[in-house]
Image (cartoon, helix red, strand yellow):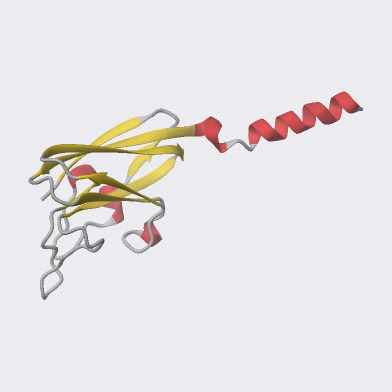
Length: 139
């Protein structure tokens, strides 16, 4: 009986361990024009929350050229990335009077929207059990 309980406990522990299915997503940001401020990167895991409520965020110090950041231990699934270069370090994306960003932005798949940000379907990517690296070019 004791052996059965022990086996059952280990089975539940290993079946419920999300880290066993975790992967890292590395984001390489290209076309960073200055070393002022930070690159603010937001990861989304639901289309309904796209550009509204991020799943995880990471900050990377800006550096002219290329900047990299990593989201660690992510479960397999569908994700999307939006980022911007917060040049003035005010923690907000600067926009003009009609709402167009005045700080450089970028999205996964280097997607661009028409009259607004791209749709979730244009930016989504699949993360399996293996680590993945994607590149995003600021515009």
